[in-house]
Image (tube, rainbow, N blue to C red; front, side, top):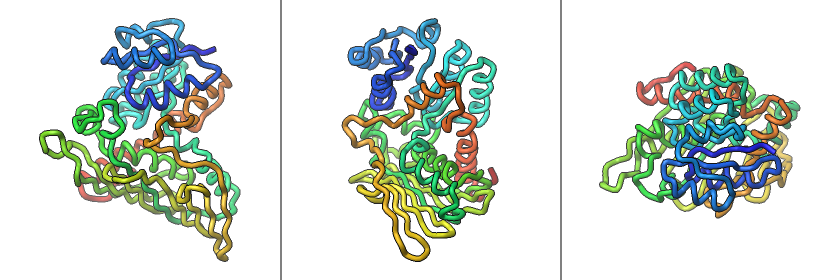
Length: 345
């Protein structure tokens, strides 16, 4: 039984990490830490474990073998590095960190400590994406030529713990990024996973179209973005993100291949649809994309993969090294939007 700790007790810890650790038969939650002790206590009341007065006290506990880092983006790297240096395996929420140097420092710290560092890129584990990758690797659809991928919802203020337009997600000092890295990192990463190649250049446009702080001033990060991504193998396509997708969540991908097209999560019943070049169709009823609207989300597979890879001592698709290329693309997108031009990755 592996004892784990959770650092940061906001919505992602409540809906994902604590919930999924509770479902995993190989883990026991030893404790929680949050700058707001009441949030930590609320999770301890449900899942057991103690509330630590400081993050340092949690990671110093010799009984804790692994931790989830669920703090604001700007604090991912320092928190993860401290935990790794204390001898803990680390599962860090996405986006991995706010600079490339921080991402590389996290990986270096994991190697130096001989511990595992994984990133919460759960869309790599979504069953429909896994099946799509298997089909693409088989050669059945030929090469991916182009793609369209979109992720949008009504904004983090509707899901974050404080349910306020003053959420840290809207502040550059804490979040660093807006919708492009909050949502776009998922789509950039899963496209890399599916295409099986590296991104070579990006063009990004990011804007604040609607979101405002309580005083009426625009938020400090983008609430909408569009990215054009080019891959080393020739595939080109778009990723779009939105925090102003009001009404319902929108999370889907289309792959245009040499032998037809693949629609991922575009239908509530058939999560994978194939339309072959000759017009014949194949429908797969696999799963449905989980949304922030779910009252209690089912397992994303992230915790099972994190714990399983540690116990089985095997590589994982969510290893930090596997995700680093996606973060390089994110940082290139930030530069592209700022300079108004295409940027090489």
